[in-house]
Length: 489
Image (cartoon, rainbow, N blue to C red; front, top):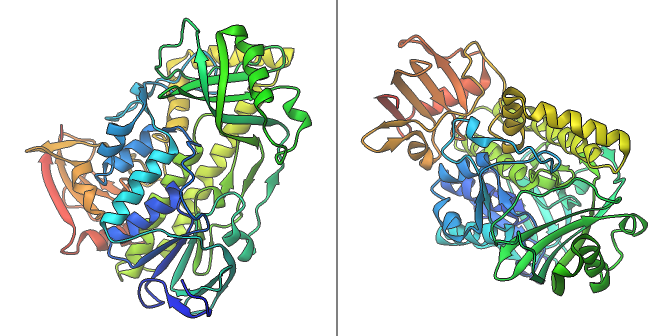
């Protein structure tokens, strides 16, 4: 950090270095992915220290899978609060069965966001990358050779590429003049971490999926975080009269709990509280020249279903290997455009399903009839499976090809001698798998675990007209990638 506006290099020469703005889960995972590929990376955040606020509470199965594939999962498992073997849609009482999907992790991993950030930050520190804190982005310009970022304290950094992971009010997005269309919130709610005296008979300390069915015009859910701390989320008529900037007092939270539970739950302390709305917005483009957006900087939506942090982590996992492949000279620049092409529709679908969940939670007699109809549909295994894939992220499929596996996540097969697909992906390189007893004879797996190409012909090769498959094939053909041959199990 400088006091005289000295221009710094962002870890390496401008054409190769990457500056990530925002040290939440998305920015931290992106930095880890770039570092794994040997890309010089700087991670900057305007906060002077991590907040420690729990915010998001769980990892969906697909996020658990991607962290496992990089060897990052075990510390999170050790530090998790609980495992919830199902998901929910609008808090309806028929849960989503994650076990209907082929995954080693058919559950939500209950772990507060703050702990995830701490473990990812520890991982980066072990790689020699520290978060540079207290840097508030105030200016951003780019040219054909790189990007120059300026900060409130006078620091200026010159870098090759910049990625905005700086949240829903993203300075990167605003300074790059990327449009953020959508709609403002139509309802307001409160989320808080609190200390309680909890005398409910059903309070076991285990996580329960939230019930978001309205009662007397209000909704409330309570989740134990351990050590006497609970997450409470509530909304009602009073909250609709307040704006986001209005302070959240002890009486407001206490009254909501008393109205819902009576004397069985007594508020003792508020650790952290915030208001949120059901606003939905999405950047119209995820790339502007040498600048990218990821996570909440690219999309905001209601937290219903617990998809937000997971959406950002999967943005990072998609962008990281693509930018690294281009900067390492292994892929053409066209591969970078596939980040928007693949992730923008995924986020649009999340925005749509959270809006649908919001409708189901409206305290209205006609909506109550809709909820009953929806419950009947959730009892149909095929419909339940479909929505479980949507909420968990396991059902994401990118551009399909002439084989049913193309564009889908590769199952974590056991390949013999203790080798698994996930284990082979830990180095962040693509895989060419030659398999017996599987749905295809040859499978080309991207570094993010999705199938770039597959064929039933043992001698087949990918169609070079596909820039994505062509780039991955080129990477897989290098000496740094691996070909595995085995009978799949």
